[in-house]
Amino acid sequence: MGYHEPSDMKYMATLKKLAPVEFAKFMEYQEVVSRDDGAIPRRYREMIAIAVALTTQCAYCIDVHTAAAREQGVGSDELAETALIAGAVRGGGAVAHGLLAMKLYDSKDNGHAST
Image (cartoon, rainbow, N blue to C red; front, side, top):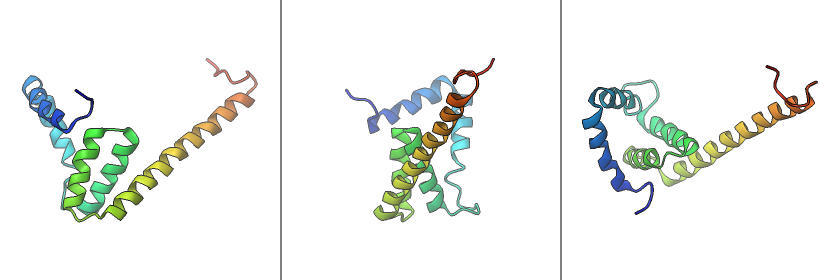
C-alpha cells in the first residue's frame, strides 16, 4: 500500500456519505474550474489548476486536472511550461520570504519579531 494512489479517489464516496452537506458544497466550489462560460477558457482554467496543485503538492488534484487538461487539448509542451512556471513562482515565494528574513535579521531586536 502506498500513499497518493489513484484508487484512493474511491474514498470520495465515504466523505460524501459521512458529510453530505459539506461534500456537496466542496463539489459545488470545485465547479469553478470546470466552467465553460467564464472569461478564462476551460483549457487555461485546467492549466491554472495544475499550477496550483503543483505548488500545494496535491497529488489527487494533479491527477484529476492533468486528465481534464488533456481532454481540453492541452499539449505536453504546455504542461511542461505550466510546471516550470509554477516552480518559478513557488521559488519566488522563497526569495520573498528571504527578504523578510533579511529584514528581521537587520531589525533592532536581532531578528526576533516584536510582540
